[in-house]
Image (cartoon, rainbow, N blue to C red; front, side):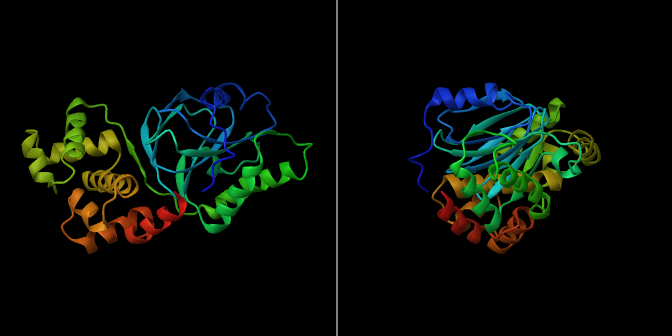
Length: 277
C-alpha cells in the first residue's frame, strides 16, 4: 500500500478529530492519515464515524467495551460515543469518514459494531482517498457519492462480528479475566477456574452472565480468538503455532472456531492480511 501521499504531521493528526470534524454541522468530513501517535486520547464527535485501518492491530476502547479492529474490517462509531484509539504501531493508516446525523437514519447507524469489508467496499474506500477535509452539500458529485457510501453500508454489513469484550466491574471477575488473559496458552476449564478462585461454578456462571451479559464459554472463546487475531497480525507465527498459543491442541477445532467468530478461516485471513498490510 502506497502511503507517500498520506499526511504524517503528528500535530495535524492529533488536532483534526477534536476541532475540525464537527466544525460544520452539514458537512461530511473525510480524513486519511498515518496515526503517527501511540494512541488517540478519549474523545467523541457529533457525527457518526466510519473507521477503517491498514498496517497493524487497532483497539478502540469505550467506557463499556474494548473493540478489536482487524484487517479487512471496519468499525462504525455512532455520534456521541466516547472512545480512544490504540494502534499496535504509530504507522497504522486510518481512513475515516464522518457523517452528520439524519432524521431518517436506519437503526443500523445507532449501534457501534465491527463488520467485514468486501471488495466493493474496499473500492469505495480507496475512491475516497482523493478527498480530505469537509465535503459540503453544494459540492457535487462528491457529496452525493459520499452520502451513497453511507447509505449502502447496511446492505453490505449484514454480519456483525463479536470482536469486542465488555469490562467487568466486579473485582473477583476482574481478577478472573486477568488470569485468563495471562494464561491464554492453557485450556482453562470452567471447573478449574472456579476452584482456583474459590467460587462455586453456579455463582461464577451467574457472575459472567450478570456482569458481562454472556456465558463463560462465549467470553473465553472471543478472548482466545481476539488474541489469535493479534498474533496472526503482529507475529510471524504459523496458524498452528497461533492455535497452540491460545490453548488449542487441535488445528481443525481452532480453525472451525476462528471461522465461526471471524467469518473466515485463519489460513485465508493470513493471505488477506498479507495483501492489505
